[in-house]
Image (cartoon, rainbow, N blue to C red; front, side, top):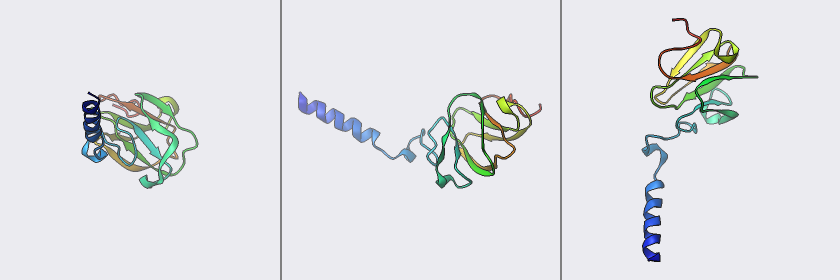
Length: 127
């Protein structure tokens, strides 16, 4: 009986130990599947900033973000992230990054918040 439990455990390990790129829920430049990430600078290989992983829909205020940073949207289900000039998801919309996953270099100097959401009701972009 113990042998079959070990064999089953080994089988499970073999299935879950596959490379992340083979999975539909893979990380993208280290950004976990389902999250939005802001990196230390314009190079995605610079690493994700401390506190730079966002999971929840809604507005997230930024502080001390200046210059170019790589921003990744690794959400699913058509979720987007909008970069806004005001705090709490207000002000003018600067950019909307749709999930694919997709990442791009963004100048965060004029950005004071990001908003994660779904649908087509972008809080910082006029209709």
